Amino acid sequence: MTPHPLLDIAEVPRTEPYLRGVGEVFRSFREQDSGCVSYGVRLADGERWFVKEATTDAAQQSLNRAWAFHRAVRHLDPLHQLTYGITIARRASHALATADRRTR
Image (tube, rainbow, N blue to C red; front, side, top):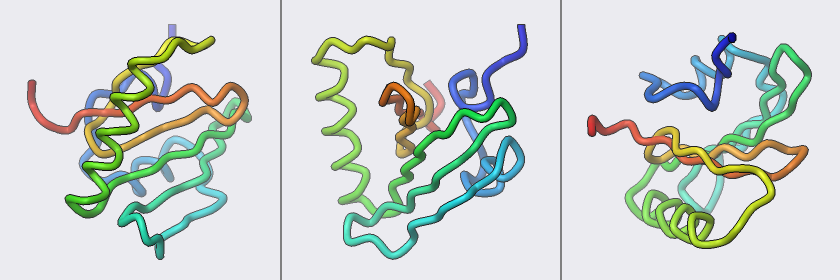
């Protein structure tokens, strides 16, 4: 089975170049008050994903709170932890995942 380019990764050196390598970044949101950079990504299979990356400590704290909330509630789609500081939501079902860049 082919690994999923977003859900089956544990770490990426740089977010945007990785996203451009696995799909089409059709939208970027760089100037956000949250301190995050967000991307709309279309994968080769046509699935569209929303990827949000923390670029400041305050933004990281916000993503941590969001991840804690989503772990605490029940979802139709299973959650998957990816990289610390990156939140990924599949547009079709709004599944949320956060990845951890730190070595565990």
